[in-house]
Image (cartoon, rainbow, N blue to C red; front, side, top):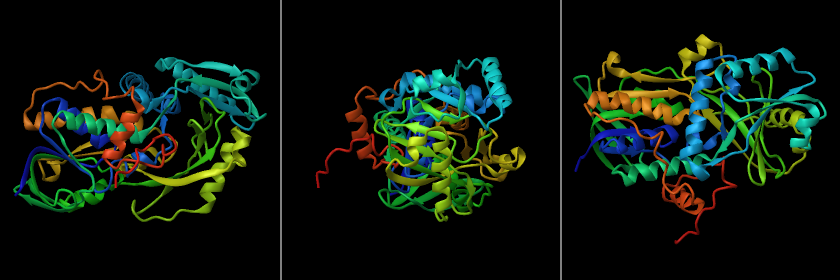
Length: 411
C-alpha cells in the first residue's frame, strides 16, 4: 500500500530533522527518510564547534550575525546538547597582528562580545598554551553534541506527529507533469511514498538525489579530518587567529579534545581517499597552539564531508571565506514540488530549517509560523533520555562518541 504524506523530508542530519520538527510543530504531516542511522552524514562527523560568528566576522558580517543569533537560540533551547565552554582566538608570534585587529573590530561592529587578553592572562585561563601565544580574544563559542541535537529534533518531530525512518534509502523517483508523483523507499519503509512536497536535505549528497529526479545541483564537497585525543584540561575552544587553514581548531570535550581540520575537494562523498598527511598536519598545527596534544594518546580519527554549493565556492574562491546556505526551489528547473537545502553550518541548522519550512508552507498553503526558536527541545535537562533518543534512531556519530552514553542492548 502506498504511503501518503504532506511532506517527505529526505536526509536525517541536523537540517533534515530540523525541517521535520519545524513542519510538525506547524501541524504538517511529515515523513522523514534517512538511508542510514540519523546523524550518519556530515552532522555527526564534524568537530562539534558551535560558532559565535567570530570566525566569519571580517569576511561576512551577515553570516557572522546568523551564527551569533543561532548560538544564542541553541543555548536557550538545546540544554545538554550544548556545552558552554567559551572560546579563544589565539594570535601566535608568526601570525599577522593586523588580522587579529581586523577581526576584533568587525566583532565590535557586529555586536559579538569579545575581551582581549595578553599572553599571561591567556595562559592563566589555559595553562598549557604555547609560549608563542602573544594575545588572545575571548569569544562566546561553545560545543555542540550533534548526535543528541539531531535525535532530540527527531524525537520532538515524532511527538508532534512526524514519522521518522532511519535505514530507509531512496531507490527510485517518478516524475510526471513537472511533479514528483511518487518515491520508492527501501529498508524500513519498503514502499512507495506519495507526497505533496519533497525536501532534499541530504547535504553533500544533494546532487546525487536530485539527479534521480532529473535535476542538476552542482556540489563541491570537501573532506576534513578530525582527531580526538585524551585531554581533559582544556576549558575553552581554541581557534587560531589567522586566515582559516589546516589544523586551526581544538574543541574540548569532557575527557578528550577534538583537533581539526583539513579541507580537500572530493568527487564522491561516499568514496574518497583519506591521507596520513592530513592527520599529521592537523596534529602539528593544533600543537602549535596547545603543545601537549602532540603526544596525547589518539582515541579515534574520522573524516567528514562538507556540503558545499559549487557556484558559491567558485564565486568566493574557496576555503577561508564564510559559507552561507542556499535554498534551491526547483520550480524553475521543471519540478514544482521539490526544494533542496545546501551549504550552511551545523550552527545554523535551525535557521536553515525555518527558511525551508517557510517555503514548504507557502507551497502547500499552510498558514502557520515557526516556533522552533522559542520552544525547547524535549528532555534537554536529562542527558540519559537524550542518549536514549540517540539509540532509538541509531544516531551515534563519532564526534561525540565519548560523551553520549548508549543504553545497554536488549538483544
